[in-house]
Length: 56
Image 1 (cartoon, rainbow, N blue to C red):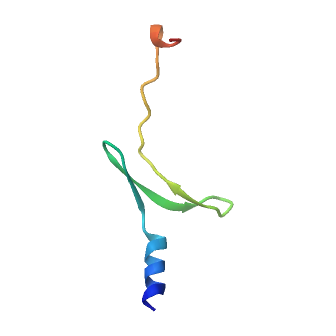
Image 2 (tube, rainbow, N blue to C red):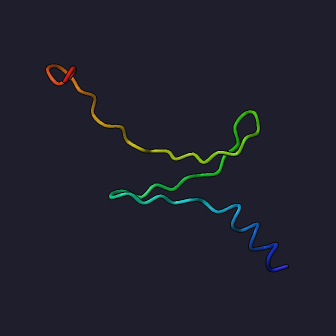
Image 3 (cartoon, rainbow, N blue to C red):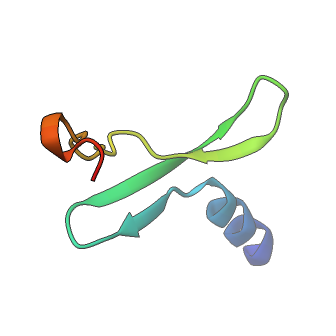
């Protein structure tokens, strides 16, 4: 019984990834085709190179 409950808890918990700053928490989601994925939202992209830095 305990092992079953522990397995259910582990399968439903979110995964947290820690980098230097900040910490991101992923959510377990399903795609339209029913595949399980981990979605990490709110991750910022770098500033795009513009002007003279464009083709360095």
